[in-house]
Image 1: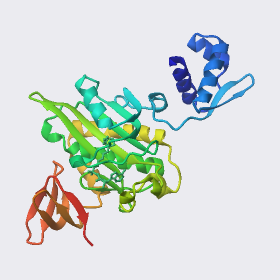
Image 2 (image 1 turned 90 degrees about the vertical axis):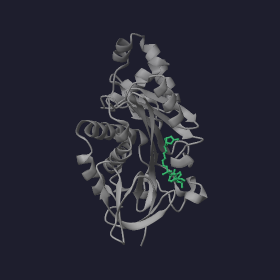
Image 3 (image 1 turned 90 degrees about the horizontal axis):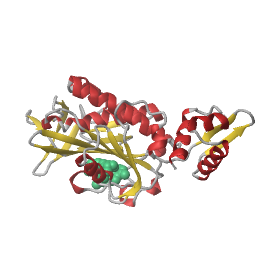
Image 4 (image 1 turned 120 degrees about the vertical axis):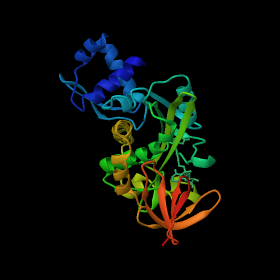
Amino acid sequence: TAITNKLAERLIKAQGEPVSGQQLADEFGVSRTAIWKHIKELAEQGYGIESIKKKGYYLTSAPDTLDATAIGAGLHTKKLGQTIHYVESCPSTQIIAHQLAQEGTPDGTIVLTEEQTAGRGRLARKWDSAAKKGIWMSVVLRPDVVPQKAPQFTLVAAVAVVRAIEEVTGLKPEIKWPNDILIKGKKSTGILTELQSDADGIQALIIGIGLNVNQSLQDFPEELQDIATSLSIESGKLVNRQELVRALLSHLEIYTDLYIETGFGMLKILWESYSSTIGKTVRARMAKETLTGIAEGITEDGVLQLRTADGKLHGIYSADIEMTN
Ligand code: BTX
């Protein structure tokens, strides 16, 4: 019920400090017996709740879910995640986000789920999204920018993801142009940016982020086991998904605002500093041709600059990149 959720939020915000039954009863305008019943309900939902005589109830653990109550408590963003749409399972959070965007959901709305049954990548590829093991999230942004500035949001999001992973786990991820976050050469995250636009410009940007968090190798389908990894595999411990979502939202807000307000300059420097591609010889597979050359950098528009052996500089807008050894 609504009160049970509010009570959970109240106890999470108390950060382990006991709050007395009387105080909670006063705050929520119900009896102490009612509070006790809600406490019992939270315990059934998986919250660890203890009580000390005369001091009150305190939280020892919260269930590992990404629902709005769990994420909202302790979230310090202005916009991002102020509206959270959570479902336990869905085909794809992108589909839900597109619908919400069409219905006029506010800037900064996020869609979170525990499991996707038809998670999607670029070019109709599949994104494996095991139940409760990752962050499968779509963010709806309504920036006042021209459509040509949309592709850079993928690069901006990549910087935010890397910063959040660093902050929460201490791992050192790298970005492979344009949208893969690799750890020790294996893919930990994919980012997919989609656009809703009309004659008036961008109506909404839907940024999908799929972040592998607590999978073990066997949780991935066999064909991914050589190329995919999770934060838990790389760090050797389970990672708190709630904390990671909050860190992700904070960084996304900071970097998307920076991009919208000041342009790509600062972000280009940050992006290049995390990139595993720049300065290396790479093979770029495109729809019509494959080019091999040195990746010299990205332009202000996020276009990859590839210099081939004949000395020519090519602007790559969309390709799959392989490192050559
Ligand atoms: P992508 O096209 O760059 O990557 C897809 C490819 O990555 C697949 O063909 C496969 O080889 C590999 N792959 C699939 N699943 C995983 C995985 N879990 N870990 C590592 N590698 C994998 C990247 O597309 C963009 C992915 C965005 C996913 C998010 S999740 C929330 C939102 N909803 C949704 O349906 N998509 C986005």
